[in-house]
Length: 89
Image (cartoon, rainbow, N blue to C red; front, side, top):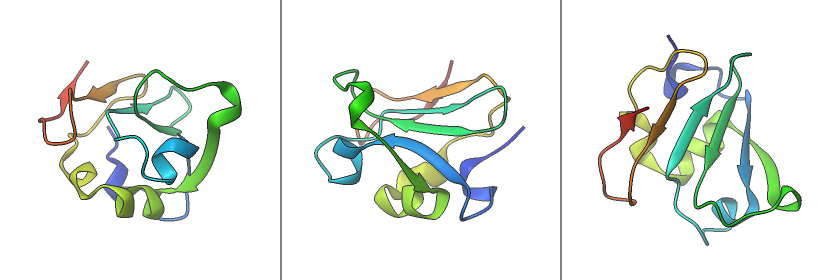
């Protein structure tokens, strides 16, 4: 099991430019089968919108990421809105 806040601070995280620029809320955190993180918002983005930041930068964008439960590779934590609780799919 892994938790975003416990991973290496400089580890890359896939996200979108909308999240990095504050135009979208983080609604989905995925740990892929290789142990890499994806921090995404709404489904309204294209491949050209994808960006990379660090774990430290992702945590700075949204302090509620500290509350995500540990995930197994392949699991996803989601929420309905910025103030909603996280649940694991």
